[in-house]
Length: 301
Image (cartoon, rainbow, N blue to C red; front, side, top):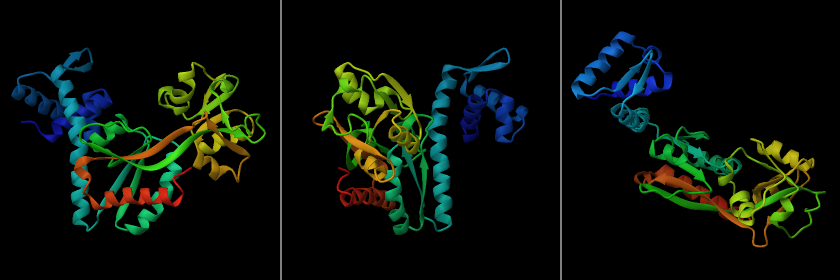
């Protein structure tokens, strides 16, 4: 009945747009692929695709099969990789997903001592996911998710490992540089530089500007932290970043952190894992290493 190749065909046809292209990717002939899927449709008693001219459109059954393929195939690939690693005497690979641009610098501080402690475990970092960070965890694309905004779901476990404060970053000559804290209205004349993330996921918006009903004069996005801070240092705008990150750049660039609001914005880096994987020793060790780093640097204050 239903076999792995059937799932792979449905997934590749959806990705490539045609049976011919899918056949090329899967290294089979188009006729063999078509015959296999036609036989499956006959066995199931339902169509998987409807033909619309030269294109194929998934039926409701086909949509369900595609969802199964997206969920099951990564798990099968992971199982094969793990078994291959066991056969070769290796522990495996810890695949880490990032939902936080500035967290990458923090992650580097954790990875270095971790690799020294676990020489038989490799680390792979992924920053873009087909289904988002939570979907990547559920889909077995990653083993651990680094995020400042955990989304609690059944089957997942999140642990806070690092406390930090989100601050406004300004040039040392900026009028706000000597302020004890900045008020939302003071940013209405500023160019705000952020990472290319939806505004509803940016703390400076959802915890500072939007509650006050104000917006910056202009919003600009930049992908890299180095360029962002160089822009701020040259007076081209202001940014919102973790205080610990700003302090690391303070010796190289003329930038100053300023508290956002009188009480500030307190944040935490969380590590999310599947509950079923909580007992994996090298995964648990990574979480403990991350927590130890937080204590070493004084909780990022």
